[in-house]
Image (cartoon, rainbow, N blue to C red):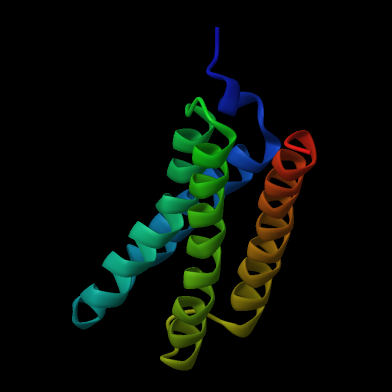
Length: 120
């Protein structure tokens, strides 16, 4: 039986995003190791915090981890932009990944809003 978070569409989108970033950054030149590392950690943090939050017992704990996941989405935005400016990814790829982040952020906000509604 899967873990509860494995049933969440947003979790799968976040894992797919982290996998795309991992594949993308494999081709970054070694001098951009700082960007590769930060980008991989931030992108993986989205899915990891969704999973960890879903495993928490209290709504406050779940909300905290979902909020961290949403923050990691926002952390990826400037990393994408620096990658684009440095010529490490094309404009079309930048646009597509930015749109994926926007969708994931909205979905995480939905998780948070759902928790807020249940606590009233």
